[in-house]
Length: 437
Ligand code: SF4
Image (cartoon, helix red, strand yellow):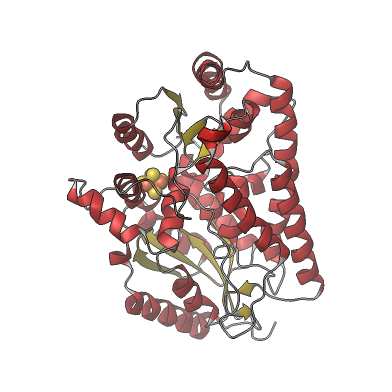
């Protein structure tokens, strides 16, 4: 589960408006797929690994290239490729109930392993399972292990059952990094562990993380200069994927922050695919991942009604930086351990409810919406309970919709649009609405 879509064109009404950060990100993603395609010729080794709890800085310190299957799946979803891949996997016997990221990945592999940009993806030199929060990750790599003849390294990350990171959790992960993960990375890369290099990379991560937090928290302004869900998935992309700990990542976030600072100064709203939002009528918090196959249509349902998302849990799936966590070069392996332990999908239900409640209050939200995706147990289990508890605690009414990640068969446009419009009308009647703020 995670996010880094390619920036969409902003030009539904004619002019194409692209901010520099969008161009940068598009180039970064395209460059990464190019590097993966050329990995064999350039002698780079490739590690398949997942987003929540990824060890990007550690991989980069060995000069290894990460390839993230969830990112390939969601990118395929946005490019309308996932439906065929999912059906291919189902033909091979994968059940309808299996996470659609997994089926999309397996289908893509069986159809030639061309990545979402049409570039061939290389086979892995290592499968690195940093297993954070969701058991499906383990089953996913079990499937890939049957497909590829390569070593596997597993980092087991304990679930935060009581909402806290305990020293024994951290020690347990650091011990696995030292005894299991680093030796495998040394073996695959042919290089020794270089802590200084890792520390340099972690320092770059912390810089980018500061800027990302500033961007996400800019939504506390009225009007919000960003959409923290539909826009937010672009903003988290580089940091949650292959660019943490890189100079490109730092540049991207510095540029993005500069653009948003300007929007705040000028009291402008978010940029949508149809241009800048002129009005903010509803401020919402969203729980759950977006739908990728109809992403723009889904977003349009909100901005057409002048509804802006001011905070979301999905943009914390690769780390809760807004709650203070930073990668720390002074504690390299320990801070990697804390990072893995702290991702949103590694939190229990009480912690998730507490986080969403604080977002509703801090961001002065008029309402909150839960998008329950059919195939993701890790997000969807307990969401009805979350709905009830949030309504009780905040007295803010919630909205519950259902869709899927990358299976186009489970996005019922008319139903979802109806539900959202009725919900917003109810908010208007029940709570009163700031108009023209
Ligand atoms: S079930 Fe959800 S969290 Fe787990 S791999 Fe699938 S999309 Fe990601």
